[in-house]
Image (cartoon, rainbow, N blue to C red):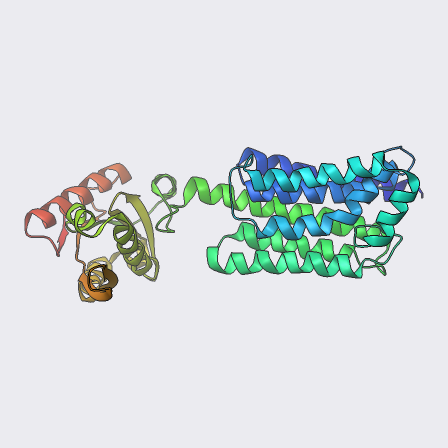
Length: 358
């Protein structure tokens, strides 16, 4: 029976360590720092290490971990060896070193002055509040970034804060910390999926996602290539920052098309995939999309340094669309892509801002 808490505690350590290795592999540097602290915290709660001389150093980690978590989540995403990240990780090591090197009376003074840590035997309400504040920072960042990783790191910290409460039994603490590590793993895996299959600028599935979708598709379907007209000149005139806003604005309209899968094909080109249920409406959908984009105005602000005034300008965008429908002549997805691209070329050659079907 006595071995069970050790099994649970080591499971929490191993799961958090695995999440740490994943974060390192996918270069999620803020997650690396957070998980290094959580792994140390899980290790500090492990009764299996209580007989070792390093136990006093682990007690220091228990005290300082909540503060380090709060500082770590407040830092912007930077390279792992950036000064701020190294300061947090250094603080984690310094807490252990100072405690191991300090005389007994100094250590007792530290414990009395900083009763804030992951110490299961002592009240941990203040530590729980600090970690909960760190979780709140993650959730607020998740609202702005719309990244599941930030949300799942917030969940991990909420679970950690519950584990700090004095009334939570020891085995439950280890279980909560193991679940915290598992939450981080889910967030990191989702972030790695987005990195591989979702375009970071447009927020749409990328070319690799399109290739996989076409490889799996069966039955009747239609394919459309969408291109923003005169986009190179647009970038040259207004700058790449405004060009990126234009791409995101068009992508947002494509994302809202019902029953249609939208992809970022590359550059200013997008691809629409119509299943069997929407194939008959493909031309109407494309025409409505073209009209909607033509009626859209992108507001930009430019500052006149001489007059010290700001001017608001509304910019017009148009798109050209080439549509290919599967039939006796066009069967394979590669042939459909080529046909849609040819139709797009004809739409641009005919004056742009139009839909051409091939």
